[in-house]
Length: 240
Image (tube, rainbow, N blue to C red; front, side, top):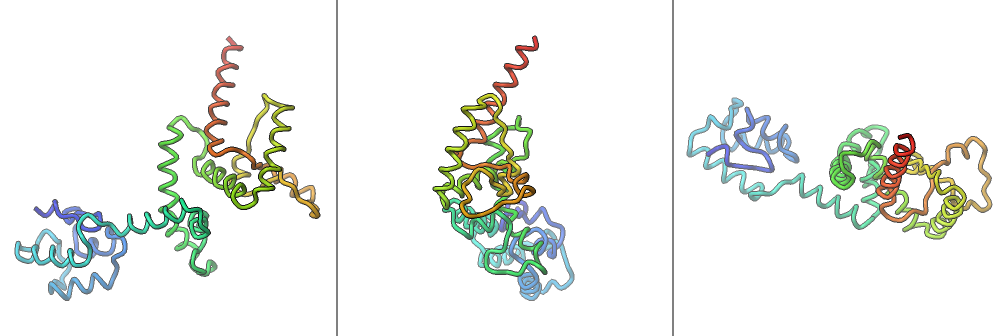
């Protein structure tokens, strides 16, 4: 009976003590709810939830139902909100993706808390990309995701420079059709070098870093890896 009750994505039977149930295993429930539970059921000695009798267990179920409805998870609710911001390509969604504060928090004192709060969106994108690209991918999936985001960001925000980069890629691929190498790490970090920079001087040291490029279609990473697999098979046939 106890093992069938699920609260905020956590089973009662999967925890040992009341403290672990409210503070360690349940996302969004901290010291206030823990003390409220102790006062309500007068269990100041930290007990296991399975040790309560049937009447007190029913009271616990009613108490938890007043806090959250069944089959509801606070973590999934916040994740759905963040994913919605990301799909709408809003500024807040971009800040969540990069791991920066969304509501003007300071980063010199609590930078780690900002990264932890934005980890859910990265984990969701990682799982989606892993199922999309498959297990045979050797490159870092997080780098590929950011490369796709940066390319789409330039297309959405700075379209004229994205078109200029597309024309540059066409000229380059016509000259060297069999030497296509894309620096995904540079694109993911925003080090773009094939855009027009009118009226600005770039030093030699910075030019060496700008090895990334924009101007690709959406989903160019999957097309690139398929092309690399075809070239690898052709090389194997030539060796034989």
